[in-house]
Structures are given as C-alpha cells and as structure tokens.
Length: 251
Image 1 (cartoon, rainbow, N blue to C red):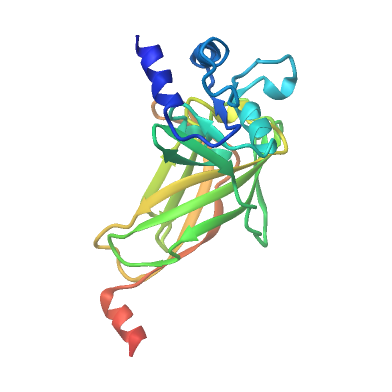
Image 2 (cartoon, rainbow, N blue to C red; image 1 turned 30 degrees about the vertical axis):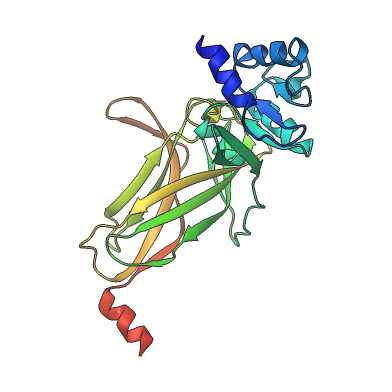
C-alpha cells in the first residue's frame, strides 16, 4: 500500500539517533509503531501528533512542534507543512523536512501594534529582516516580519507588504495568509513570536529612489470587502539604484 511504501521510505532515510517525527495527523504516524514494535525497526525514533497526550501543550501541531524543539532532539516533519515556517526553519532533507528553532527576532527601535477597533485583537511588529535593502530594478527582495501576538486573533488574517511611491501609490506587493492551512492566525498563541516571510519583485522599470515599505493585516469576508486590523505600519525603506548608480559607487 501507499502507507506501507511511504514508511519504508522514511525508515530508510539516514535519520539521526532519537529523531522526532511529526505530523498533524495521528493516522500518518501510527504505522511507524508497527515497524518499531513488531519488526524492531528504528525503535529510537519518536512519533508525535496533536492530542497524543491530554497535556494542552500538545493540543495543536504548533504546540507539538514547540515541545519537540524544546527536547533538543532532531526534529522532522514527515510531509510538507510550509505554514509552520512561522515557527521554525524548515529545510528539505531527503523525503523529510528538518525543523530547527528560529533565530531571535531583530531589535526594532519603534515597535508598532496593530489592533482591532474594539481592541479585542492585537499584534505587535517586533522587527524585520530585509535583504537586500538596496536593489536594482527587476530584482527580488526578501522580507521577514516578526510578529508578537498580544491578544487572540479571532480571524484568519492576510498579511501584506507593499512598496509605496512617494506619492502614496503602490508599486509592488506581497499578500498572503501567514500560516496557511496548518497554522492560520486564529490558531496563534498569545505571547509567541512568529516569522512571516514575504518576497517582493521590483518592477523592471522602477526609477531609482527610496521607497517606503508598508505592512499590515486584513480580512476579506467577501470580494470587494476589506476589514483591516488597525492601520497599516510604515516599517522602513528600500533604496533602488540603477546600473549607472552602481558604477558610480565603484569609482
């Protein structure tokens, strides 16, 4: 069967001793126990999934991931779970995905908070990574936002990063639902810090200059209707140079 073949594939991987294997689905982990207890294959491995114990820390796959990383053991997802890159670095290794702890969030001089009109939902932008901060037309910029959850978010929000002209018009943007299906914002835990990664592609005809980055969150209950979580935040700038500018810097 496909399940048997998949587990034979997993158990053939050169996994380090005492590795922890994760899934959000109990039925995807249970076949491993057969191979461990009946065939004595890799009894050192530990399989975890939500609700494996009554402990509230294991209620959601995000908490299971936290506990696995705290154990100090090597941690792997047995399938792609890209949304959990909010909480860990995820790198393909063979047919699995190695999870490691995120680095500490960078320090941001002016922390800024987004909150709902009723103040019942709130999240703070702690800082961001921007690479590169000087780019040329047509290049891609990598942006990681570090959010701290201050109050429970009741809705699955979309986050955005917009590059803005001096006149306030948008040049390019990235909008997505952070956490995807596996860890949407309504499941986020108060107090945790999450890394929300975006990519911006600069237009090939963008003039040289300095442009503002604006970030925020919103919910779209139906086409044409936008509910913003507070006002957007201006978090920094991107300098765009041309090839001529670069040549001048080298002289």
